[in-house]
Length: 566
Image (cartoon, rainbow, N blue to C red; front, top):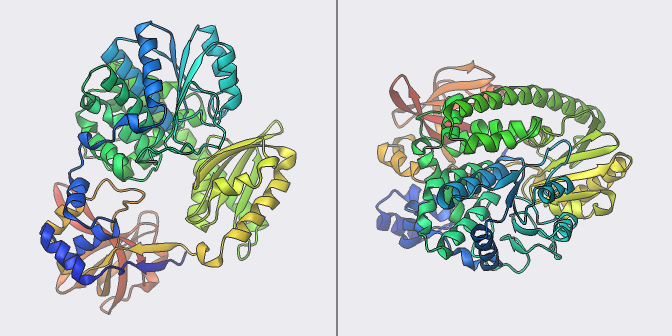
């Protein structure tokens, strides 16, 4: 897929040079900071040295006082509390963290409930509410879900159960009749940061609980790896509080005493390694998600809350097996989706895909939709149909608001929820064709041709001789990388290809480049098709890349990970 390079040169060179001198860094580092909106010493210091004490006051969030007071009353009166979470990593970590805090810090053992993805679907369910009523629950705390659960919360109220919603999804103008609603995206919310994950909102509730109970909220830092895991897996912007959570949480991962997390790291081959957001997203999170996609996610909560090492190892092995099964189903579904696209869609003119099939596994359609978007760069919805009802997962591209687009198809669906770039829906089978036509009409109207060309946003031009030890040391401090703080991309021009490029592994392109007498290794994962652009001994290669370090047999070398070649 041809990428459009966008090199960010909108800043005044004099300002960048002055800022570089102030920070004692290279102008390229100052340029990267400018690209992230960091243009003064204090903001730069906060960016590089963010600490747990820099978190916002939780009581700035609407309904926080009310929610914390209700939780304290339940704890003091020994009421039965149920934690109700979504079945993805964000929901699982929210439940596991709250259980751990209430058990270890307050001696309280709550119930928890994770809905069955296949039978109940997303969010608060009637089954879950009825289960709470049977157990004598008087307070439900719904984490990473609940903001659209009008009927379910009304049912809970009828049973005399109060509900505290701790969610982060888009809210409609009319909120459900919960006792308290914590959601930084709720209408007219004034909390300073709106992009928390569900586990981040849950952490704010616990932070408020500690403050009200005259405990130092900094003590919660020992649970921050839960927030890092859930936030990174949910692909939230890694700025503001999310950056603090993920940065500190990744540092704490290998030092924490949670036997479940240790078993998970061991099973994934990551024990005693420094962790990155990429490893969380692509290695750890899929193992937790797999049990929710393929069966019941309660096993993941049990893994993260057990204090029995043997039980932790057993559950971690189950997660490994479920993840292997998920991968096989994922691959088959992806291949079937590609066949449908190539045979039924006009790739020149159709600006979105809506694919459905009886028998698709609803647990993998979100993953497959993301892979289709990556391949074709079109908003994509996959719908798994069973017994006349379709469950769909939608993924988008920058500039196309999925939530607004689905809202225009509202009357054709049984329900939907989500945000700009990811959403879920349910629909009757007989309405899918009309929904497909309506959604494609919306996409064709709103997606200009320019929006369908993937952009490669490049932070700065660089020469290979400028990539030294100090530069890499400072570059590492930009981590953790993720949305709104992506790994910096550089371009180097007129490079000479040294030796003979090779295709290794699964279509990976491996070669060496030279400039100013400096030779460096380069690798382009899945870019073997671009080998034709490499002409050895000619100084005519423009290369966009990120800078990595490659550890091999005790030696660390610089490796340029290629994004594109011209």
